[in-house]
Length: 171
View 1: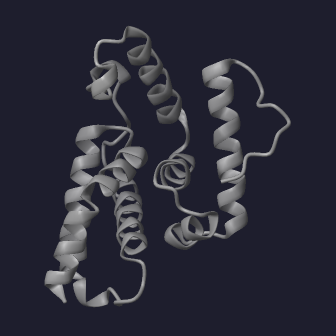
View 2: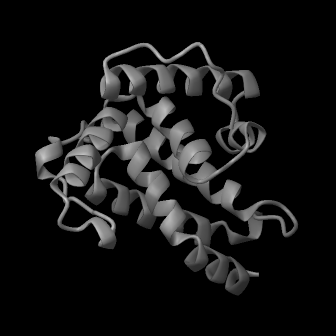
């Protein structure tokens, strides 16, 4: 079963990196979290049940590892946005407007509380349903919905300087 876990882990590394970055707010710390998560998952490969969602299992390990790191008083308090590398889409590589927008979105997301960043990463970036995000993070579905609503409101305020329209956001 360890070979199956390794193969699945390799396949989901890009998604795990995005999630770890959302939790930590920093590419280097995100990479550290991914590495710690993979080491822990390999050490506990026998605990994953075939037929269950592997990605949820990995995201839960990452989230718990990050909480453990914070509880132990790690020095992970975030670094200034200017020190983070900019990763632009290849087609927009030279567009100053796109780079500016990318920085603004990154800053707005990084300003969210960690539990809201995790929800945004799972639902808005990785396409999880509310139920899947709730199961992954071991929180009630209502908590997912309220955190996502608060995150969206905060992002609207940060990016557009206004309250979101009265429309309901549905994922």
